[in-house]
Image: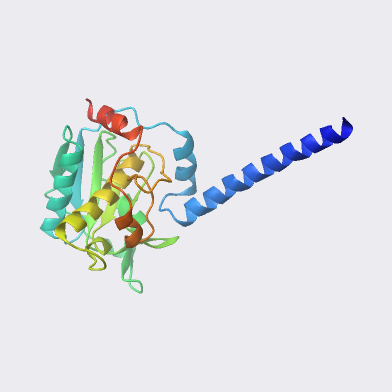
Amino acid sequence: KKLFHESFIKSIGSIIIAFAFAVVLFFVIMIGFSSMSFSDIFHSLFSKPIQHNVTEIRIIPIGYVFREDVEILQNILRQEFPKVQISISDKSIKLPSYAANGEKQQYNAKLLLEEVSSLSDNQQIRLIGVTEEDLFTPKLNFVFSATKLKGNSVVMSFKRLRSTLGSQSPENRSERYRKVILRALGITFGFKPSPYRNCVMAFSNSLAELDAKGTAWCDPEPQLIQKIQGF
C-alpha cells in the first residue's frame, strides 16, 4: 500500500509538472508569435466577450492611403457587419515622426494605435487606422495589424498585404484584408485566439500562413457577432 501511495503521489506530481510546463510553453509561444501582450493573451483565455453592441466601425487613414484599399476594406466590413454603420473618416491622421524607425523604414504599431485610440473612448465604436506603411512592434519585426483586447481601436497596414508574392489577384488581396481585419476586430470583441487554421482567429506569422488560413468565424463566434450587432 505504501509503495502504491508513493507511486500515486509521484504520478500526480508528474502530471501537475507536465501541465504547468505546457501552460508556460503555450504562453512563450503565444508571446513570441503574437502582437498581443502577455496580459491580453492571459485575459483572453479567461475573460468573456464584450456584452455591448457595436454601432459604428470607422476607417481612418493614417498618412496617404490608396482610396482603392479603403474601399475594399469598407466593402468587407459591410458584408461582415450589415447592421453596423461602416464609415470612412474625412480627416486623416498625420504619420507621427516619433513613431518612425528610419533604419527599418517602418512605423511602431503600438504608437500608431495610441494615436487612433486617442480620438474616441466610445466602446460602441471601432476605430480602424489604416496605413500604407510597414509596421513593427518592439517584439516583432513586422505585424499586419495591432490592437488591444476589448479595446476600441485597430491599426492595420496594407503594405505587405499588397505584396506580389504568391497569388495576388484582387480577390486574393481582398481575402487577405478580410482575414487581418476580422481577427483584429475579434480581439477587440474579446474573442479567444484559435489553434485551428480554418478559423479567422488563428494567428499568422507570414503571408504564406495568412493565405493558408481560413476566413470563417468559429463557434461560438457567429452567434456572438450577431449579438454584438444587435440581432
